[in-house]
Image (cartoon, rainbow, N blue to C red; front, side, top):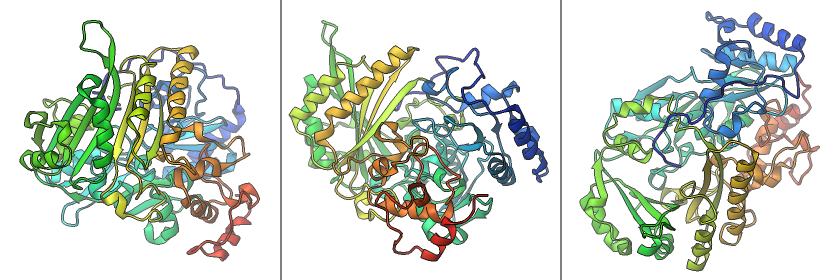
Length: 559
């Protein structure tokens, strides 16, 4: 949801630290002592440890949580927060986590839709990578090293300081953390031209379950494949990505054309489905659907479809292209603005033309805090006008301007990359991706249930119109509704094939090789084969994986 960043709507005045799964004081003390004793860096880790007794604890915990669903007295909270300044602090945290049996969660940005990076139903501590945010740009090779704690906005700003014609294809929300965004795939306004963020990763640094720091060569191609779209949190702690920067024109064009039902929006959205993935690869045209106030005097509501475009070129080239491919929209020159690519990142993030690009560095804005629920789908066949009208009816059930559907076109480079090239399989055959979102600001269970029920009803209505066998989902739009690991009784294939299709099997094999004891685990992490007793239909044989390695790792004793 691209809204101009706002100040927080609510602040948490107080919080109850009594937690249903209390960690014994003795265990917590031993864990804290372990962190201190095994820190070998010049900066003592004790200065980077925050417990509920510290005044810094709540501000650090809440700072990177934009979703108010995960800020409440009843939300499970970490017994400790560690904010490392050096890789050795993370290595120490892994060692002490295994030694004392407290689960570790890692947060790079905090925007996981289900709060996996900062909420757990078992005793846990949080490693927050907010201090590991160094970015090094090499314009000669058109590459950059980016630490996992950096935000997309910081990456874009750093690129712009070096070049007007280099860019990186990643998301439109500048406050999102790089670590999780890239490891989940990362789509963008440049995806049709250059693929996903994960498609443009050429090296990485990860700390594995043994505390080793591995690059692409030392981790091997199987693990390097898995973390580029398979979710890094299942395999280790991503420290940094080496990314390939792409070339963009010095001038790009952004346009937004909005039409209501009274202005033929239904026909236009229907027609858009037939051209969005087939137009020139330099054009990306996303559609946002909302229920808004009608311009009529009766004070009623209507549906507004906003066609938001990025064109890699000037407006004088774009307009003839639009006249040939989508004349029904009636795009005019006054609907468009020519600007640099870095300025376009501000435009799509909802900033005004008067804002400096330095706002990309302001992590405190975080896009505004609200209660939020998101879901996703992929579409292979155009939805009929009758089908669209059913969507509009459901938007009228939700409060005005509080819900949105974003339709993001594929085609172009997205259709050229093989489904198995990375774990992200949603390539050729998909016309567009759907992101569903609903936002609310009222506190309380009743409001939460009402809005969550609405988006689930909409999702249910969409069943006939989206992908089937499986009904696919996008890992970056994490959704517990499609299945979770329930206290070790895992049926991960239920949700795993929705995110990864046939790539899920290979992810399980990689997990079994690198983390057979399932140290890096969460409600939707990739399980090792041992979690299922080698069941659930997964076979050991897989091209490119060493059976010797698999067997050696499966029977390794827990550490």
